[in-house]
Amino acid sequence: MTTLSYPEAASFDPKRLRIDKVTDQLDAAGGHLMTGAQYKASLRDGRRIISSQGEEIDDVTTHPDLRAVNTLAGIQDAQFEPAHQDTLTYVADDGGRRAIGWQIPTTREHLFAKREATRFITQRTMGMYGRPNDYGPMMALGFLSTIDRIEKESPEFAENIRNFVKLSGDYNLLSTDLIADPQSDRNVPRNERPSQLRIVEDRPDGIVITGAKVAGSIGSLAHFFTLSTTLGEGVGPEAAIWAAIPMNTPGLSLVLREPTARMNTPRNDHPLDHAGEELDQTILFDNVFLPREYVFSKYNLGLLDLYYESCVYSLWSIMTRLAFRAEMFTGVAQVITEILGTNKIPGVQAAVADITLYAQTLKAYSLATISESVEWNGVHVPNPELTTAGRLYSIENYPRITYQIRDLCGQALIARWPEKVWDHPEFGPRMEAFFPGTGVSAREKNTFFNFVWDLVAGAHAGRVGLFENVNATPPAFVRHLVYTKTDRSEAARRVRDYVGIA
Image (cartoon, rainbow, N blue to C red; front, top):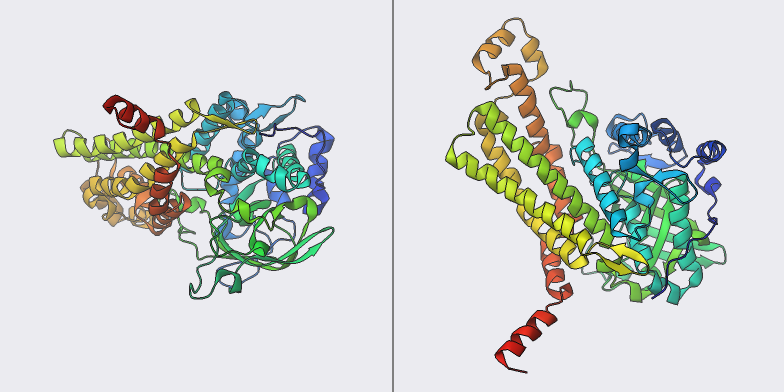
């Protein structure tokens, strides 16, 4: 296999991203981390974002539907806080600090460090974002782990991947992956569908692509898409593309879906929704030109079967985040039973134990994937067999666990009132008298169950649940991967040898 190399300088030009004011500031200061303010400034780069109401969004950092930008900016700022700096950043060979997500994992310790960053960010976002700051590098790292296949196609493409990872780490850029095609009439062959993303012009300086993709969650607030054509039955060579796509590329339009998180409400009414959500979108390509240094592969149908390999870090990151989200669920379940005074009831204890078992099992998967990591092309990869099994366990059990949390609440998820009711001179005092919890006031109890509603019962929670199911790949396909990608040959051989059969 090819050993990973580290070029001294990237050929990517940040000016192509039109964020050169920010990158010039970083260069002048000798740093490699964007503050929250610099991150927001970098998003005012001419990108074309269309709201769910069909309106052009001039500034994604101020639009209420995209208020999640403040959460992402807060994580950027946390990189500079002494208490969190060693969790979210690492010291590179040149002595400068960079975001931990972009560290190339050449040891198991690097993977454990990424896991700790995921812990911090999951706790900061309550696990409601599937594409937070640390997730973006995962697809690019997956490209590195399979770079021997790219080298065979083109050494230039392989170098483009290495350069993209270096550029993104040097400038603290945010990425999100782009894989899924739009649902369309299956009676029409994929190559004949208008939505099929494809190369329509191949030039010496780059390629021109047209078509559409979907999801790309958080894309409106990132700098790049990392595009990967996989799962490509019926795809022709023109649609086989791996690339990096700057979000402000001319001809690229992102049409946002309708928000599910409630807005313009007091924080206590919707403790999670008030902070916004991760908006998905339809991504439309209208003769988008990609410079050749952004192209990682083209026309290579042989890469279409590399979903399992190229997505190995992405899928591990998802499973690890779900493990920390499950840990959070155990805390939520415990507080529910304490506030309701039901923590001594055997049936309630059994439900909390089941939620705890889910969390502990995912924790075991998360740790085991690192402890039994494998080396591909000079990088340490979380054990893909265990990652796949953990992913299947996480998504198959997720609906059952969130149902149990809702069930533990009883009437408390229904008997909730906005702040205006609690402030009412007549009804507020009566509510305080009628609805106290165990050890908390009625109003505190109400705020807590507003939080639980946002977490597992509201429209935003419903979107998150649906997203988790397809984000980690639908269970039926994951089960197929567990069957096809897990090596059982050694165990089968031992059984045959013991029995004495060939």
